[in-house]
Length: 190
Image 1 (cartoon, rainbow, N blue to C red):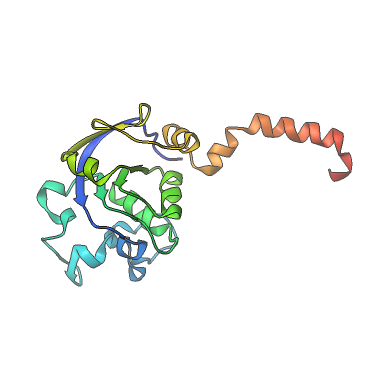
Image 2: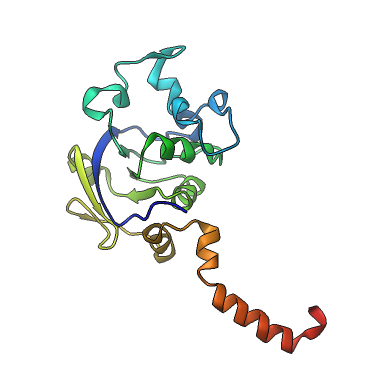
């Protein structure tokens, strides 16, 4: 289960770069676990640190005004590259609840929804008009003064705090009725 996403206000950190791939989000050398935890230290490791673990003061997440950011702003094609779900797990463990970008890698977008992170697509002009403190209302599909689109199934999953298994189990009564009916129509299969 994920935390339900209804209305959320947080600090938005601008990382307005195009084509941030999953290897930039979490380099392969930082994937030291096959679980969803222990990954946030490696988030953007190639940019957050200058050598070893020496903090890069110029990287946006290391600046005092954005150190508690929970919303990330970015450019086109955020999360492109390999399908590693570790990238989303690292973002979630770091504390991000939403990513607002001009576009997303398709698999990354789906991994965000499955892990309770809201991916929002806006134009560059709209993103640059968002302030440091951003309010997102998923029920009305607004961020600041802008409307965003999201598939109904993804919206329901995020509002309900559901992962794919919980989403499937929410239809258990229908599934049970289907199998009861099917077992009478095709008993040789059961």
